[in-house]
Amino acid sequence: MTHRRPDVELRIPADSAYLAVLRTATAGLAARLDFTLDDIEDLRIAVDEACAMVLPQARADSDLTCSFQLAPTRLTVAVMAECENPRSPDRDGFAWTVLSALTSEVRADVDGNRLTVTLARGTADTD
Image (tube, rainbow, N blue to C red; front, side, top):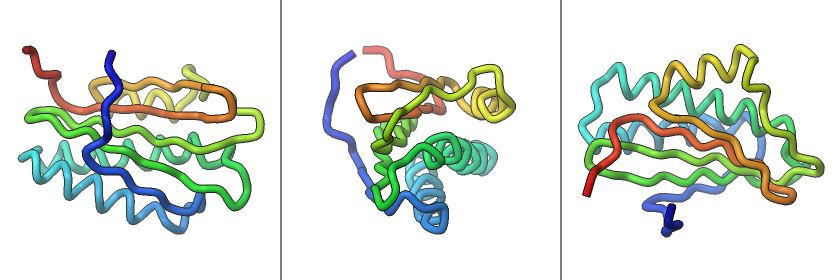
């Protein structure tokens, strides 16, 4: 997997009061890709769930970074925060089950002091 610069990246305070910004950005980008209204709503909920997994672990007064990768038939969203002792979300929990049901792909990664939850909706392009 090659890492490339995100098409869109937003950084907001790691506070649930700012999540409406991410939901709105997600809906706007999905609409730009001609996703259906149901797909757009599922993505909005999925981004909320991903943030709900990351925010409780985020360092106080830190930022939540959300990067979006756009492809013709796929939107990939990565939600990341710096944490003191990051733990991967419980993959047997209700939130993970909901996230998995709303997306085509979901994963969580802990890299040093960073927790990232990445989700995607749509089909991958085949080159």
